[in-house]
Amino acid sequence: MHEMSIAEGLLQAVLTAANQHGATRIERIELDVGQMRLIVPDAMQMAWQVITEGTIAAGSEIVVVEVPVTARCKKCGRQFAPQINEYICPDCGQADVDILTGDDIILKSVVCDSNEDAESGANNGAKAQ
Amino acid sequence: MKINVVKSVLDASDAMANVNRRRMDAAGLTCINMLSAPGSGKTTLLQKSLPMLPATARTAVLVGDLQTTRDAERLEHSAAQVVQINTGSGCHLSPSQVEQGLDSLDLSAIDFLFIENVGNMVCPAAFDLGEHRRAVLLSVPEGDDKVAKYPTLFQKADVILLTKIDLAELLEYNFDRVYDDLSKINTAAPVIRLSSKTGEGLEPWRDWITAQRAE
Image 1 (cartoon, each protein chain N blue to C red):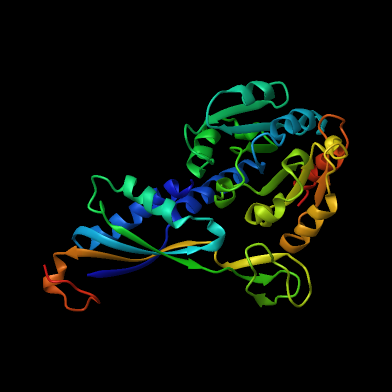
Image 2 (cartoon, one colour; image 1 turned 120 degrees about the horizontal axis):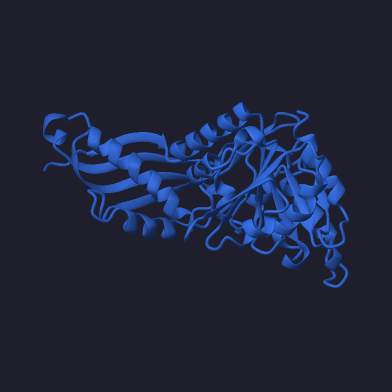
């Protein structure tokens, strides 16, 4: 259940972004989660529900997109897409890699109601208040 | 409206881990994070092996557990400094908890700092604490199938310790299965077979520890 500690960091990032845009309520956030981070989407949603209570993100939804692992072999430099339980380089047969993707958790976007909506037409998915 | 952010949620955690690492670098100490399931023998291994280090090697242990100071009490005669961190309900140590642990240690009097993480094969693997090396323990009674079941833990290991090997025969343990699984996940980390009970394999483990300062 390390989802709760991830949710704490996530809430800070979401509220910072929301404050910068004068948001009054957060509806949805989109999260890219690397496979190696061992996040269970349902547990993440539950942690988010608990941690956002009493904030402008209360009741918001998390959309989790799983990011597969890609790696570079430290021995021969070959880039490849390992399975989470198999990191064998297809060229040299070693399992000794630098992880390139799939080991991070990225907040991609925050969908919210905002006072800026009326002023700025530049935002995708803008919603009338 | 949709705000495009593209920011790592782990930035704050990783930044704190880097602060810890720089602080330990500045103090000239080497930090080894010990990860495993509960009951795999982390505390006993430290009890038995720390006194085997050269007398000039000053040691300290940060012990993470949900509750109790039992492990710290067990270690108080094995390391010069021991600090217990109780995580309450937390399933892993966080970089900020380690920072607080560092606050209560005399870093200038440490050559090797061991972090005994909360016993758990999933969550601790996902958090950099600022350590220089990761040691992952797998005890014989846990079964010879665990490497494939918890690949991320083993993929991120710098050394893998197969502990309680004195029980291998009794439990019909298949070492080849472990090595075969590791050959798919991590061929860089050395594997040391040891028993804290009989003392077998403790010297290679001690030598691995001391070699980490030579670099």
